[in-house]
Length: 444
Ligand code: GTP
Ligand code: MG
Image (cartoon, rainbow, N blue to C red; front, side, top):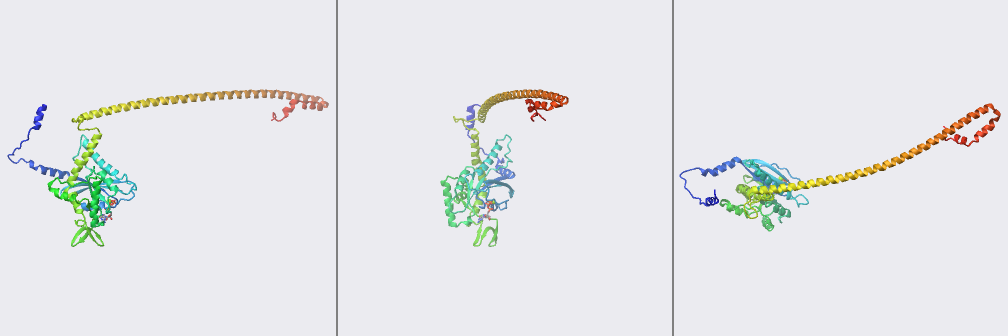
């Protein structure tokens, strides 16, 4: 199709036509509902608040059940995220609910990094979803979506102001998740103090540029209630799973020596408002916002980081194929450069090692020659000594033979001339050689 034809086709006005009878596409919304019901829903809540602030009690109160809870210790060395998933059913609607607890939040002496594991957890869930989306064979239909739809931020009821940890954490989270701030254990703060505390919290959030979730006012059906509820934020809640008899009715409440705080009594706390806004009116909007705002932002940043763009520098549409080819070329070029660098490094290393080995060989050779010379010198000396000793031995033997000859001669003479014996003996012992022979060294 020529370009002009295409333009004409896309600019062509759509015409309204009347149907001659019932066709049936008015059942589309019903089909959607039926499909969604069959598929079931998932909803993921992140609870951030200090240890023992009432997170688990509030979850139990909100869903009117008892979730698995185990008390967190105050000695965690860092914040740790603990997700737990439950299958709930109300009428014929199945809800896969995941409650993620930020265990150990606010318990460390140095709280500078407390927000990090929470941000990382949220990002990991986005990343898992993105990876599923990028697969060639994706199965988003039955994918367990673990992206966090809402973060209930539990504020400690000090009556003063937000802690810097609260502000830093909410600021780090606000572009990643829908934050609903709530004042926990609101029964521990008086009515007038609570009013001032709420105003203080909201002004601190505004002055620090923290974006909290605003209940949507664009849908006429809920615009009014949502705008009223926006003015009530942050909700001051009380949690309890205990049932107390008030009048002739059993209600969920906290009983004190001076009276009873009823969880579902709107003049006692904002629990009902929270439940209404979180579950009954805006649950789908929270899911939608997560997908269209927070996940979209994550996806965009991630794809841009990977080098994908929608337009080139001249604002012309950029095709995915071109981006892929450019990236591939860049990658191959880089790979080649790295390979060459490594090859050069290897050659240099081999050269260095070779030189080192040669030097070592030369040193060894020198050492060997030196030792050889010493050995020869010593051998020569030993040889000389041996010769000297041999000479000495020969001289000795000669003297020994001479002495023996003399002895035998003198013995013969003694036997023939006994009178001359004394004289000869005298002569013999006056011989200098005789002295040396009998002087111990050569006598065994
Ligand atoms: P960890 O999971 O251990 O961090 O605690 P948590 O935040 O889940 O608190 P949890 O719900 O276990 O409650 C801790 C204590 O606070 C319990 O004794 C609750 O009964 C009490 N508690 C819970 N909610 C409220 C409340 O609204 N008001 C008051 N006064 N006490 C509450
Ligand atoms: Mg708990």
